[in-house]
Structures are given as C-alpha cells and as structure tokens.
Length: 329
Ligand SMILES: [Zn+2]
Image 1 (cartoon, rainbow, N blue to C red):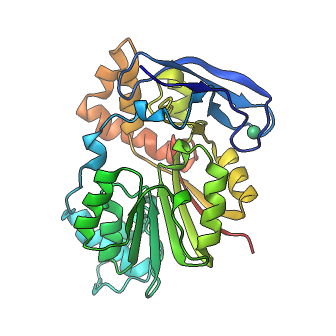
Image 2: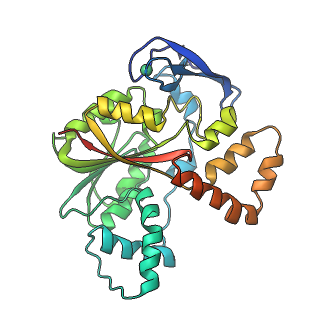
C-alpha cells in the first residue's frame, strides 16, 4: 500500500509527551495488512493514532464504501410512527398533529425519551436552521427536513453529497470540507456532527469554526466512540471503534469535554448509546471466534446483550456517546 506516515504532537493540546497505549493495532475495517500505534498524551490524556498516515495519503484507507452511501428507507414501524412522533410533539415542541390520551403511551414515552435523544433530535425551533457536518447521503437531514428544519449539509464524499442533494431536492448540500467552505457567522441554530470528529486531522480548528457559525444560543450535537467505554476496555485492539488508522482521535468523556471547553463550548450532557453492534462486531474481529458465536445467538442478543447495554448506557460506560454542547457565554 502506498501511504506516508507522520509522527505528530497531541492533536488537542500539542504536547509531544506521550506513551504507547496500544502497539501495532491492525487495520480491521477493510482487513488490510497494515498496523498502527495508538498513544496517550501524558498531558491532556487524549488517546490518538500516532504515527498516522499523512492527510494527502489517507485516501488509501478510504476505499469506496457502498455502505456509507446507501440511503436508509423511511421507518414506518409502530415505534417510529406512534412513539417517536408522540415524544417529539410532547417533549420537543414539534408541530405534529398528535393526540394522545392513553396512559400506556405516556409510560412508553417516558421509557423511550432518552433513547430518542440518542438519534440527535434537537428541540424544535420555528424557522430553525440546521447543519449536518458529514451528512453522507442525507439520512439524518431528510428526517430533520420532514420535522420542519431548514437543512444544510457538508460532505467530503462527492457521490454521497450528490445523493443527498437529489434526495433532499435542495442546493444546500456542499461537497467539500467545512474548512474550505464559508458560512456566515452566527447562522445556524443546530450543528450536528455524528461520528466525524474522530476522523479529523485538526479537531480543534474545526470546532472553532463551528463556534463562529453557530448562533449564540445554538446547540452542538456530536457523537463519537468512547475509548474509555466497556467494549473498548475488554476488546482493546479488536474494539470496532478503534478503527485505525481512519480514527485519529480516540476520545473519552473527559477528553472530549476538555476539547470542547478549550474551543468555546460548554457541555450540557453526555448520553451513552445502547447499540449492541460494537460488542458483536468487535468479537468478530478476534482470532478466536467462540465469543462471536455466542453473541450471534438471537436470544443472547435480544435479552442478555441488550440488558448489558442498557446498564452500560445508564452508568455511562458504553462505547459510543452523544454530547450536547452550547457556546460559552
Ligand atoms: Zn494532549
């Protein structure tokens, strides 16, 4: 494979003091025979891939990936139509014609309320403007548009950006990176960035730009893997979210909070997600497949693993987190 490596200082605090955290972790996403070290900054404790492929040769690790481009079909399940819509009307101020007068739906709302926040739905704001950075084929933006938001997207993959443009029938999807585009200051009410920040070469600079283009009372919603989560701890080099070398920054709730505060944000809350995927895929990454075989059992998945994930989420120890932040006043 053709790529160049660069040894870097900590991408968050610029310290050159680090220690090895995981040595020779294999590239697992595409199954390439390449290995990378992951280090921990001794100053701010950020864990980061180092050395890492240079920005101009990283393309070697972004092989065309249809999964990334695929649009997700509309969800017409009972859960989505009744529960989600009801919660959006009741707790998120959305103008959805919805009448509920059943006690059990009220109970269901309370149960699912937290789950809904995980899918990045902000409170409704009339005529609100929302930007999704790394919007892919526009799955999230399509939902948000239906809910009444004026939507904008930024996407580096040309084909994905075109797909989003067609799907949303809008010219507000930009192909490129945020750093190369110029938006007005104080323009957006909500900026969403799902599973993007861990890929960025200059996370702090990007957050500083976001800070400028977000309104003073705007909201930033970010998802990233949590390297201090349970799955990351038990699977270590086989942990699906490690994802070297594409993931350059491996955050914990502590390091993401520090990065956000040094970029002009204050964290309102962090919610740990309940998905079982990392648990199962990581087991599949291991050489010995006994655990993977157990986890592949539908009963184990539906009952045991789901219960484990709910507990991990409640205690803030699952391996994906969603962070809600706003600008420092
Ligand atoms: Zn650091």
